[in-house]
Image 1 (cartoon, one colour):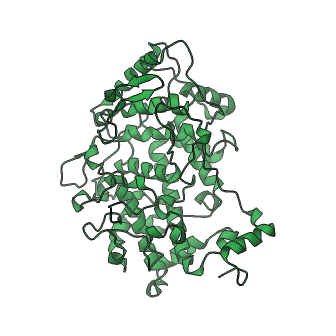
Image 2: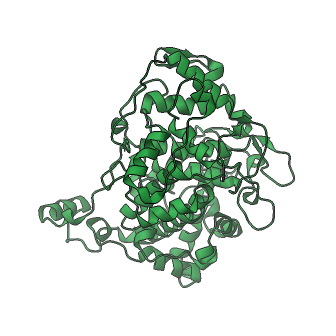
Length: 504
């Protein structure tokens, strides 16, 4: 084993490094807990009853409902790529609408880094169920009945790193695209017949550059070196897309530029994954969802919830054409709704499979018809479970601590102000800021940009800490999801082991 003392296992070698004091040079992993940006919870105060507050919130969200389809600046697929990214960096399996909980006690089940653990799990050794039992460098993908579906076990459960990526057929196919990208690159990286081609040289060049010399990289099993190079290549291109396409699609460029220049406006020791991000600002995607989508150019739009065929095998008729969701430069791409205070009507009547009973909000019973409103659920979870700072409170904090950002404070909307509430729930406030331009700005744009840039800054092997430029096959510095998806579609059938990788 490369770099190892003879006859020592990897575990023994780690212990020896610790005893020698050498392992202490390794950067500690990022904390996997949520927390408040402003340091403390924002409890409900004042003389209004909980029922009066609930009635005000219902009036607020009812004004968000729209049937008007107004194309925003982002491609439709970016909404679901954003959901995929969310699943890569956050998983709160603890909080609920009506129960107070300290965000510091909420364990983030995902690693808070843009590392695609939702695709790779913990790698072939620790997550063997995701990989072929003989060709361990390859991720399982496809079924005989539907070659483009995710691999599944005998019960139909998808064999993927994060089960949430099988909750709808759109995110499922983005997951599948990244699996295919890995397998395509893998087929070039470790195939002797292809060892000297352009793709193989790119993979080994990108995958091996600037890697830290730590106890972990020194003990990579030689047979997994090609795998590690491919995984790192995919990760770096993915990070590039997050920073250079996902964020600009939904966040004002000034917020991104400010975060890149000063990524610690909330402090260097603040929570890695703020509850204000996961519970409010990054939930902007709910406002960008269309009520229906075309999966192919020659068919009628399908209702959003008809595509929520959660956690079950997909049929070929549900395969989406990527050019309908990402710009493949053929004029077919659909667009997301703009970020703002309007939401598709279908999100105000969530299906029974998602919500089928009333909810408790403190001592108040929220009728099932109201509990089915996604916007209301976001606000109630904020105010009771997470107790986030209001939009105005965050704006004032930023004015005091980061005046260079020029944050302006917005007044509470009429639906709240007329009911004697002058603090706007953070999620709605972020959307309110975006109304004018269709993108997050101000408080919302700052939170989202700061969190992503900080995650990349704190990862010593990210695109912000290496001299990385995307491969020219994906468009070099002009790389987009559309260009990468087009390359995947063109090369999907070139994987020599294609049929062998199917399962289910």
